[in-house]
Amino acid sequence: MGSYAYRYCMCFTRKFRSPDAHPPPDVRAAHAAAGAAHGDDGLRRFLADVQREDPAEADRVLAALSAGGGAAGGIARFVGRSPAAALPTLDDFFGFLFSPDLNPPISNKVHQDMSAPISHYYVFTGHNSYLTGNQLNSDSSDVPIIAALQNGVRVIELDMWPNSAKNCVDILHGGTLTAPVEIMRCLKSIKEYAFCASTYPLVITLEDHLTADLQAKVAGMITETFGDLLYIPSSDTLNEFPSPEALMRRIIISTKPPQEYREFLKAQGDQKNSGNADKLAEEGNLRRIDSNADDSDGKDEPDDEDDEESEEEDPKFQPDTACEYRKLITIHAGKPKGRMRDALKVDPDKVRRLSLSETQLAKATASHGADIIRFTQRNILRIYPKGTRINSSNYDPMKAWTHGAQMVAFNMQGHDKSLRLMQGFFRANGGCGYVKKPDFLLKTGPNGEVFDPKASLPVKKTLKVKVYMGDGWRMDFSKTHFDAFSPPDFYARVGIAGVRADCVMKKTRTIEDQWVPVWDEEFTFPLTVPELALLRVEVQEYDMSEKHDFGGQTCLPVMELKQGIRAVPLHDRKGNRYKSVRLLMRFELV
Image (cartoon, rainbow, N blue to C red; front, side):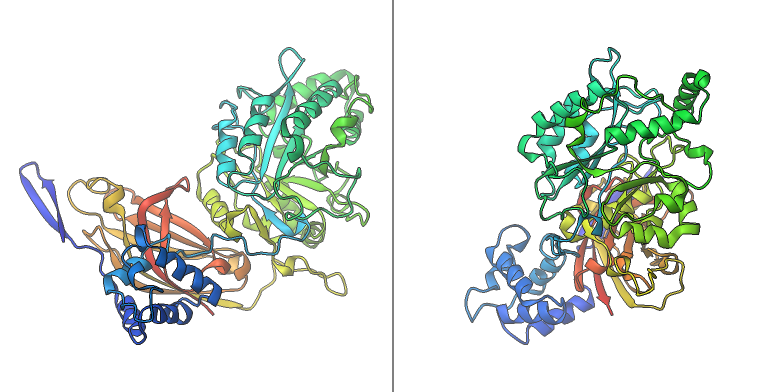
């Protein structure tokens, strides 16, 4: 039992007792039930009956506990040593349950089938991966690329432009004031960190604004830098994408093939008066903050917000010169082909990637939702932020996910709610950066019918969540971090992010003047599409006169939740896990 002293009204000191974390009634009951058997048998029964662990996972947990050390030290003495192993104390049992390392809320192992084509997976995707800040005048660097790779991102975007001398290549956000970084620096860092967080394939999307001779130079740089890590397809086009399993520890390239890029530029040039082409191109570069010129494919109506850049055809273009560059491309980015319905047509003989802005996606889903889902069953759809997000904010990814879009590109430096959802979504499948799409997005009915995200669906599963208590703030924060005059007044917010029918947020009561809040409250969430649902958890410190203080957050994929009583670690706004802050919660999915 500790105590905290706070100065009050300059002349007085207030003392508050801060009790240690004590086991809630459900933990006491579980401990008592485990006492019906002895030692290993009691804990094994608890893992099977309460935690719903399968025998193999129960064996793994018992082996980890019997090894001792760290949080397992207290409980190790009664696990698996002998048939007469001692019953753990209540404190040891509680310590095990309240340890995120020993009793996590989701698995840290890859467990999904990884042998399907890449188009069957959502892929953790970055947008303008080299930018350190906003989209207008921040620096370009390899540092954010390294950070993204360390956080499990599997798609890195590089925008390639000729340097000032026109003899080499810089990476920068074209048409803005962003400072450049040399391409070789980015490539070397990508090679070093490509598989530090995941062994599954890394995709590099190249936005190409180069002359043919510089394309050939980039091909040489890529080949020399990546060596055997680089996957080179055996044919010019693929009729099916390889699987993540087949491409483990390989780097693959995605961009427009040079010949298609030439035709794209020629088609745009034909729409302009030749005398005004240069002027229009310059104005387009200055007007358009988002530089996805080569990736923004066909649309039904003009969209001023996401207008494409205008560029003249490169007079130096020679097909033979760019041959080495073209053969490196595994995922071909398709060129615009008229109206949206045409752009979404599925070619049975080859697969490709199509890119749309979030604005274009919103328009397309309103009129061509079924076509998008059919397209994404074989092909790859990449969505990127609209050009007006100059502060590197992000958008709601759920519309893209429910329509099967695999590469939902996010600004990883834009630390907002949307990015927290993205980080939570890709905690699934061991955090490898690839998450298998739900079966209902991969199936087509006998008459060509596909999943309809707009349809009213019945409840498929119900998630029951109990929030017992929290601890760790007293270790990770100063005593006056939340309130200068007293211990914090914490409350928790728990809810679902998913399809519109499933979205909801609920909150606990506020526990005043406690570093170790005990809520012991239960919430129920009916889910129509649990496969895409995320459990959102936030802790706030109530402030009567000002904005409530942030106390931690996490997002967890509902279908990945381990059942039973679990220790849930919380993260800061950027997604970095706190050292000690955690909640004790219980999950039941029925």
